[in-house]
Length: 207
Image (tube, rainbow, N blue to C red; front, side, top):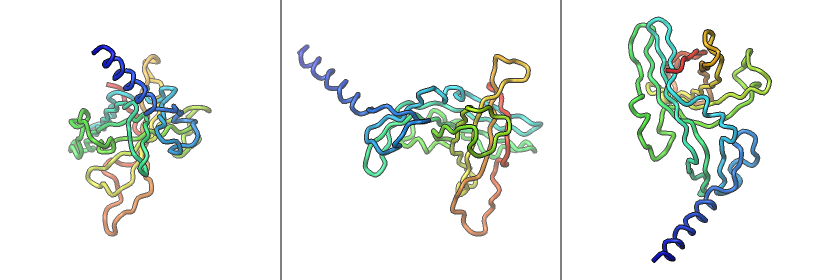
């Protein structure tokens, strides 16, 4: 019986290793999606800075996001299996009149079959010189680009680009600068192209 258990355990370990090999950096690795079973990893832990609950406040206007990190998320592309680290999340937006327009925060702990069912998701690590332009970014600084789904206008293509910045009153704490930008989308005729959350930059404080 012990020999059988050892054999099964050994087989499981071999299969697990095979399913996540080779390990390739998400930021500077080559041949993205060219190697089946590859694991595209956040090797420098760039995502870790952004995990948590963040909130922007301006009078009655509030914008809150929760972000979590998913390791080794398995996905299939053109009938081939791959693994990658991901950031995902949900958000709440209250406009300048105090009206809550969107609130998906209760879905943050849902185990969706597809991680893109969350309203924030992605894993692009971009250098400082990529768009949107960042006047205060330092050479070598890395930002994170994620997709945000506008629940009320899901036909819009919206990205958020994140970077951490020093807190003005507490240098041991980082704030989050979030920029909402548009991206290519096939927008139906005659519909509003103005997002529910206005385009622009939001300084968010960790909660």
